[in-house]
Image 1 (cartoon, rainbow, N blue to C red):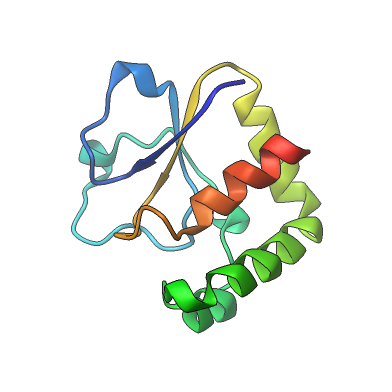
Image 2: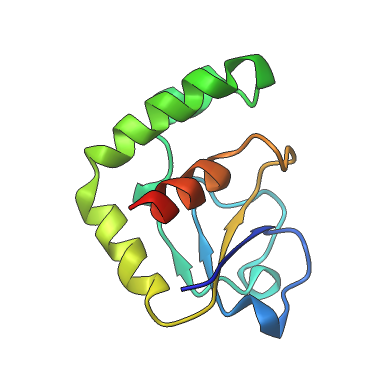
Length: 115
């Protein structure tokens, strides 16, 4: 299983493999054709409450990671669905956040690598 992280606004590539959107909300201003998303796993994303609390504030990053991991621990169905999708080879977790260093896809990839 090879997992790549990429902003959904970046052009799709054949090297992406399966493109899996891991955000609860569809990315603004992006058509489904341009996004080329193969699977949209809304339920794997942080809850709306956690997402709003975090607000992509780097000062809240450590606590966001802890809280999101706790949510993932309680969300075995969504985690299992994602693992099944990743078992087919290369996959790219796509996300809409502008901040490429502090977003849920990073936490999710780390969580999966530790599982």
